[in-house]
Length: 153
Image: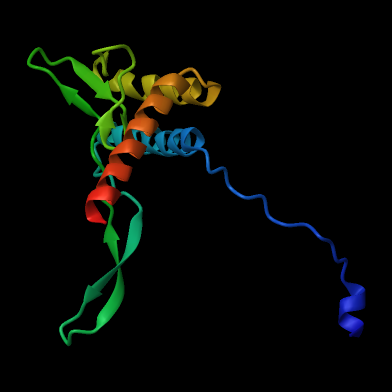
């Protein structure tokens, strides 16, 4: 008991993470944009982008389940049209995020301008400028998932 008397005890508890779909979607989008920035920087430097590895369970030769690290698949968010212009699409829940009705792609021009555009998008998401679009996409994702749960039950 003498050790406990030397410690400073409090009733503090960790803060629960927000269960708000908008804040979850916003955080995921920020992570995706940062990852896209890392990917485009690797492409511009001429090296292969190596995404962080994730743990997965696989069966080895003897049939035992073992934990291994595997590369995570990262979808490239930019593409070039026939004229060679680079465009970027943000995705929420795997679907393109419409910034204006019927417009989801951002025309960048050339690939070397994409990192600055991604930084601007990260700033806009943090400032809440895309909250209405993110909220709509997160709500649509929630409806789709609830319909899947109903079909499975």
